[in-house]
Image (cartoon, rainbow, N blue to C red; front, top):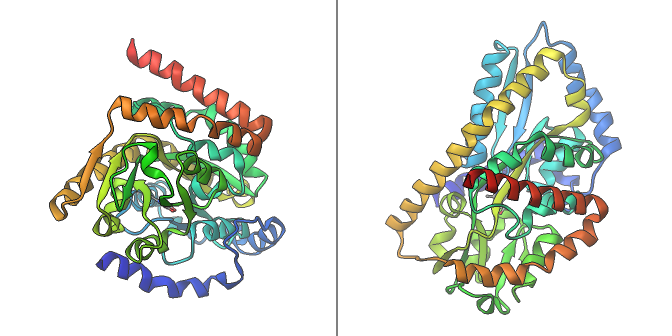
Length: 368
Ligand code: 6CS
């Protein structure tokens, strides 16, 4: 509980960034973004040669998380590569706002860099809702890494992010999503009327409606108390998060169904990125490229070690679904793809077709 208390305590910084006026809807504020960004960040980049510039990097997760490990390594690389000309300040979750608010801060140019998970961001960019669909990615995470870090997949989304004033820098898998519940969840029937906390995108909630659940979107910061007070029956997150947010303390069972990876994206303000002096952009792009392998290994390590910690510290019932049990969920999830296509249109179809065929192709190569 100490980690929880720490990040709840740091909410005061939020006011310093004028978040009081931000909604949690994720609506864009592009015009305002452009104006503010031009008056703050661009003026900093203009002085790049004489004075170090500061880039603020906002996280959707607390210290010790996968996003925190990413940001720390990014900071190390960029500061080194730029020879001290760029300083990175990291703002862990709790210091600035909810995930949707962090995206708004980037749009406004109040912070330069942030994580934006599709589970929230698909409310604004429906195409990224693909990463909240179940059984789209491979069971083989090496395949997922290749597909998600490819230029082809980046290019599928880049202009959608740009239309919101955002530069898509990277797509980062953080591990398998795992269901926790007040009771064992083995079959779609176990989800009947089950109050499942989800992230806030409507496409994501459909995935749980398909199992008969009663999805309950809420910000990350409210999940622990929601479970404790029994406002929700369960939630879904990767193992490292279930451990560091202490969700396992207030749940009876954990189900590993390997139905989806938790995917995050790293974003920056687009105008800011486009206006970066060449050297600075190179430092950013190089660190971003180097981090693909780093974070892939780190998330695997975090998820493994935190599972051991959960086992040591609790007697939570851990269920690993068989292939047959997974198939029941796979079948129940297929109709949600039509809902995704309705929301994301022709581009959504292109995204779904491209990613599913790339996954197949890479799986074929891996099996050779
Ligand atoms: O469940 C959520 O809302 C959050 N989960 C993780 C692991 N990262 C950020 C996200 O907002």
